[in-house]
Length: 270
Ligand SMILES: Nc1ncnc2c1ncn2[C@@H]1O[C@H](COP(=O)(O)OP(=O)(O)OP(=O)(O)O)[C@@H](O)[C@H]1O
Ligand SMILES: Cc1ncc(CO)c(N)n1
Image 1 (tube, protein in one colour):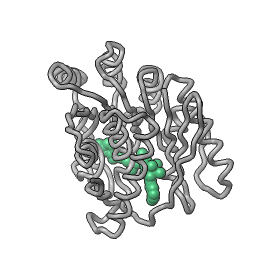
Image 2 (cartoon, rainbow, N blue to C red):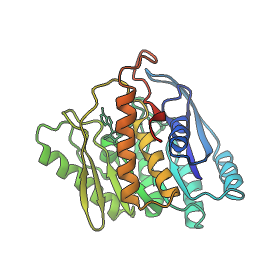
Image 3 (tube, rainbow, N blue to C red):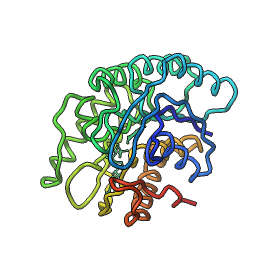
């Protein structure tokens, strides 16, 4: 079984709703620590109500005090005080196989943190040393690493090298593996760059032509956590998760759910 520490997306496409759907697709029971409630749909975020750090701590301790959490992921944490609560449990050794999705901004471009750069610094300094895998998208990698990141695949070698450099910095900051996601790149493919101490690997795949890409990042990180909970090595869990997201995008590419960027089809596996 696995745990997600994340915000609620009322639209059901991202956040803890996406995480539970992805866990379920792999047959992994999901537990949830809610960090915030968002009023959100396929067009954007209408409101954010963070939970007090004490409420996050109480949920974490309730789950960890009873259930055998084999792997966990963090999504929207929102507030450096919540990062500190999670980091404390990591330091105590009770949050194994942690996947950190450093959520700062929604697919729509709306902020999911009051002060994204302070939150990014807290995540980098306090959570990355405990992360088995960290999964920034390109804007998140830019803030975490203070690096310019590419927007297009016009010069693929340059784009991949910039993503690899961000990944190396995140590994130097303490993550065992970094997956720098290329979902935001303009071009014919959607390459993710995987970096660890020993290798740099490009996981490439054709870009699915669709506007239904809300929650792909949450879905990827939850699928990685599901793999880790099932005992897979990190790279195998990342490769399976990438294939799952591609299949979920393909299956939902013609859906008309909402008038903005709709969800992916979480049911595609198994
Ligand atoms: N149109 C697409 N076709 C194929 N793969 C995609 C597409 N869009 C995103 N992906 C893949 O989905 C995963 C998530 O990437 P992305 O960069 O979109 O994350 P994100 O911005 O954190 O997502 P979100 O904020 O929507 O949850 C990556 O593996 C990426 O390569
Ligand atoms: C609650 C929540 N978490 C994460 C994301 C990132 O897609 C989102 N849009 N909403």
